[in-house]
Image 1 (cartoon, rainbow, N blue to C red):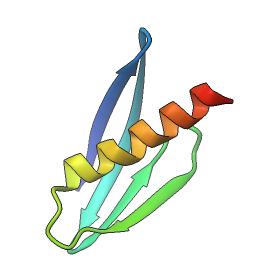
Image 2 (cartoon, one colour; image 1 turned 30 degrees about the vertical axis):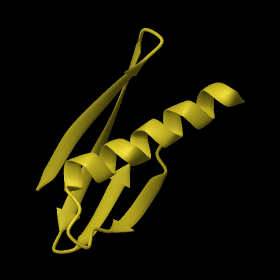
Image 3 (cartoon, rainbow, N blue to C red; image 1 turned 60 degrees about the horizontal axis):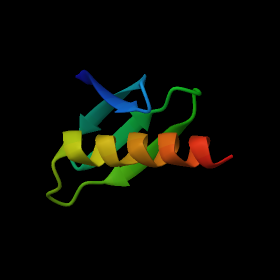
Length: 62
């Protein structure tokens, strides 16, 4: 099932979608790219948020 997660940074809200299938997580980032993670017991929502935060913070450094 596809879930949605949001992260607010400097007044802008960024949203991405993610799918956890078994132990695999796929996060679809706002620019259309995707990141994958093997969860190994991690919470899917927190892992997806980590990917989204990394994307946003990297975006703002450029």
